[in-house]
Length: 177
Image (cartoon, rainbow, N blue to C red):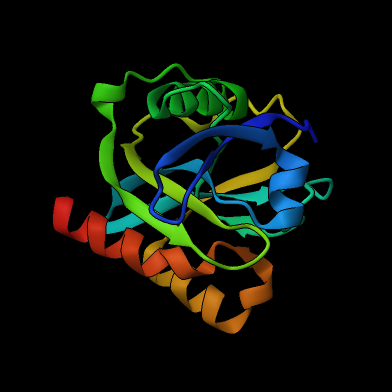
C-alpha cells in the first residue's frame, strides 16, 4: 500500500494546514478526509449498488465486500481532484463531476481510522466489462439490491466493509431517485 501524504483536519473537518503520512495518520488516529463514490442503478424497480470484494492484500478490511469506491484525498488535492483520481485509478473511468450526485459528509470516529468521508453517487448505465480494475484493490464486482446488502450485512457483518453507512446511502438514493 502506498504511504501517501494526507492533509490533516480537525474534529470539525477544517483543514489544519498540516499533513502527514497515511501510516502515521492511521496509527495515531489523526483526523483526515476520504471520498466515497457509490455506483447505483435501478433494476426492476429496485435500487442496486455495484459492490466489490476488496483485495486480500488491502491493509484494512481485506477480503470483505464493499459498497463504495474511493479512498484518501492526497495532501494538497481538492475533494473533486480526489474523486477524479480515485475513480480513474480504481475503475478506469473519467467521470465529469456534473454527472455525480453529491451527498453529505460522513464522520467516522472509530480509532484509529478517524476520518470524514464525502459521499457521491453515480448512476451507472454502462457495461461492467468497461470497468478496469488495474490497481490490485478489487477481486470481484457484482450488482446487489440494497435490501439484499442489508440482509447480508445483518447475517455476516464481518464479511463487509463500511457497514454503518448503508442506511444513509439507502435513504439518500430513495429520496433522490
